[in-house]
Image (cartoon, rainbow, N blue to C red; front, side):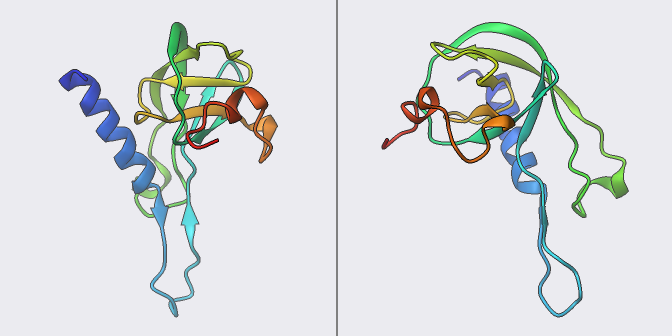
Length: 128
């Protein structure tokens, strides 16, 4: 992995972890967290880890939405981050995509599939 790509991957991992806040208990604060999501072609996609896949052609610009429910969001002024979406070999982009800013082994599945992963994605998950 080239150094620029490694920096993007490290930043994405930090963002995914940095979007989680939890209370120490007793303070009346509730737990808050942001999911690692991306918006592409007017669809929201959520991350699925531990997948083995080949990245295909470049699809176009995508956006990593801001995390506005944590204490690390600059008071609600954090902006969305641009990234680039790519197809996953053998999977329609309306089902899942890959993005520049994701750690290795993470793909994004369209949220319309909820907790039921499509068969195309199930077969990409390690250990399935």
